[in-house]
Length: 252
Ligand SMILES: [Zn+2]
Ligand SMILES: [Zn+2]
Image (cartoon, rainbow, N blue to C red; front, top):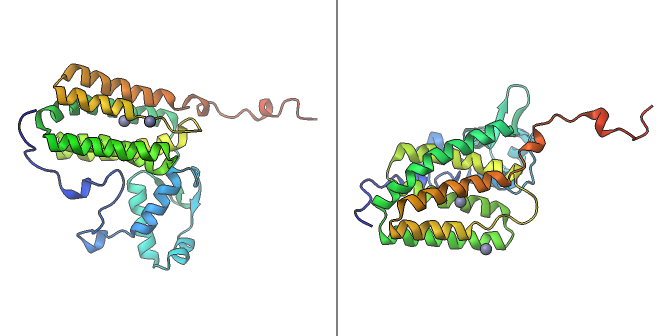
């Protein structure tokens, strides 16, 4: 473990994924965090299923804020791929197709393979402690059954790694990819208890600490493949065949 972070990325990225800065610097970009987080958490915990329409007027009423404020939060959620803005329907919860999900994972594997060696060059003992603290928080959320928080924190671990790689452009790409992955996992992960990633995250940090670059890079790749393999992406690729679905159900 040599060297230090040459250029610490700006604070705004530290609370990612998809948690906008607590005190936005520019008024024009200020986002109502209550609305943002409430929608984010509801989507991640599957309380708002894909395709659900979010009416602006209803949100104004619920949060007692102006339409401009609501619209800004919705725009930010759309920017983070949590919502889609549709011309005639307004904001709806995004529903990434299986093909898109696979592309997002493929892009992550490419980037994160490069991130591991960069982290090895840069990370200080304090950085490794920060990674282990993040793992502990994630592990707690996982076993408490707090799905929304677990998804957020398991993404956060990867974003800390991206941050430690010391490349802001890369961190920007990773922030988007991890947020999109969070939604994909929320939509497609097998029901029941979330996967405990604690073991693999712990091993990854140990390999980084020991400077075992090939092993760490391979583990990262296998880890991401394993998460993807757990997703039930195949089931939605087939269009529902109504006749087949209803066969034997007293059709005339
Ligand atoms: Zn992970
Ligand atoms: Zn566990």
